[in-house]
Structures are given as structure tokens and as C-alpha cells.
Image 1 (cartoon, rainbow, N blue to C red):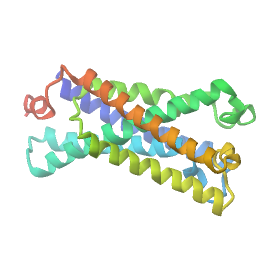
Image 2: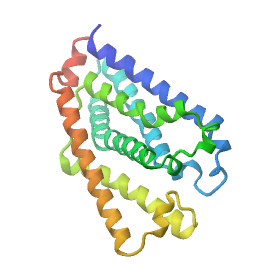
Image 3: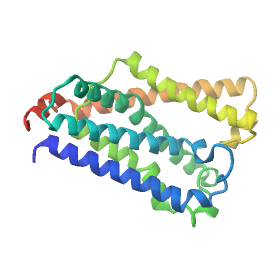
Length: 234
């Protein structure tokens, strides 16, 4: 089977998978969790942002695939390819790594801080893996199946910085204005300690960007450019 066909099938399967996972979470889990009904709902959590990013990314992939496999080489096709690659490299991959590493890192230290036993009956472990573990492997497969043009570091870092700052400001608004601390330890950080936390988190996120860049380039180095791949099945 031609690799573009495999990539296209993978994109549609991944899109359907994430839509199902999110729908299952909203219908069977979110309504029963303690945060339900509070200001911001589940959008307080970076995990939910990450899941929505995956849905958006694979939706863009599906639209791009449909345009390219139709034989069209119009400007809109090039635009969607650029958007797909930029979103993958700048946001989807680094944020996925951040969510997985932070979740399982905190879990290893004290699971009660991130996944207390009292909610396991509501939020099953398999769903937790779907939203915090398998997300990394799915994007590694994506990087292997399809070569993504890496954006300039300035463009990529600016996109990631925008998302990171947006979430940080959202958390601060919830905490200081609504008195809803998504992560309770932030409530006790004051002055220099809060500044150190922000700087360290920013540096960690920047490091994840470079890791995702290396992974993308390494896994896609033997793949032809997208234009060449899809021209074989025109």
C-alpha cells in the first residue's frame, strides 16, 4: 500500500478515535467529576486542551488529505499543508509531550495529586491512558508516516509561547479572580518562588519543543516531501 494512503487512513482513524475519547469523557466522566458546574468546567485542565488540539490537528490532516488526493495542487492545498505542519511541530507535538510527562511525573511522586483513587471508579484507568499515554505514541506514528516541514524556530516557538501564555493567564485568572486553583500548589507560591516556577516551566516547554523537533526530523528524514508522496497517487 502506498504510504500516502496509509497516512490518510491513519488520519481518519486518529480523528475518529479522539472524537470518541472526548465524547466518552464528556458524557460518562465529566458530568460526575467534582469540577463539573464550576466556572470554566473541564477547560481548566491542560489535558482537555491537549485532547482538543489533537482533534483539531487530525481534522486539518483529513481536510488536507482530501484536497491532495483529489489531485488538486491549488494554493488552498499548499495553505492546508503549511497549517498542518506548523500546528504539528509548534503545538500538537510539544503540548502532547508536556501533558504526558507532567501527568506521569506527578503520578510517580504522589498519584493523589493528579489521579486520586476516589475518582478511579468515575474516570477509568484505560481512559486516563488514552488521554495521557497513547497520545505520545500516536504522534510518533504520525511523524513516522508523514514528513512534516519544520517551521522556523521563531515561528514555532512563538506559536508554542502563545499557547503556553494563554493557559498560564487562564490559570491565574481562575485562581486570583475566581478563587479556583487548578493546581493547588500554585496557591502557596508567592513572589520570587512563583517567578521561578514560571521561568522553569517556560524553559521546560522550550526544551520539549527542541525534543519534538529532533523527533520529527529524525523520524521523517527518509520520507519524501508531501507533494512528492501524493503526486504518486494522482
